[in-house]
Image (tube, rainbow, N blue to C red; front, side, top):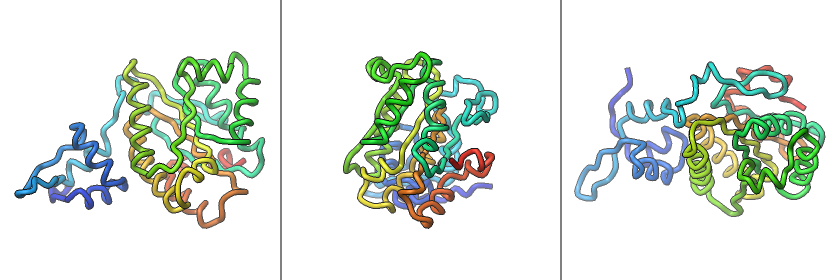
Length: 247
């Protein structure tokens, strides 16, 4: 039985592993029930409501999670799966991500790519070599969105994803495909610790959307301690055949 104890905004943020700004934004939007108490009308959140919020989904006019899968490396992956492929060569970094994005683009599903510099150049070249894919045309049509938030906070980054996902789903149910090159994303945050806090917040937020996310980690760019924390922040990794996610 779930407790009905009331938590303040800071405690609710810690419970959901997100920022206090996300809690306030979800409350203001009516997505997360809140009670107002005291002369200052401070927010209080019931634990039961937080647990229910974790299970809520947006865009669920699609069939159930179990009924819909996408292909990652030849294996079926359910919606709302958040993976962290790890690679150690340039080619290995493209092996899963490029076919994953290309399949979605050919199916008319929105794709999102976080990459910069030489990494982005590799994606442009590889995607243009895929059948029926034109990188620039996909961007112009809005089917592929290149995402970035230099010097943003974790809360800003999560709010940006919610806006992008909300806009995509406003046109009707669809599957969202996300590839984030974490060496590129790290440069957008002040530290590895903030990047990992963002990963934890994204894990909670993405569960509410019909998305499959590949957070790509270049083992040449991150130390063992970070990779260990990455695995802990991506529990879906342990539901997959791990060998297929190590490139």
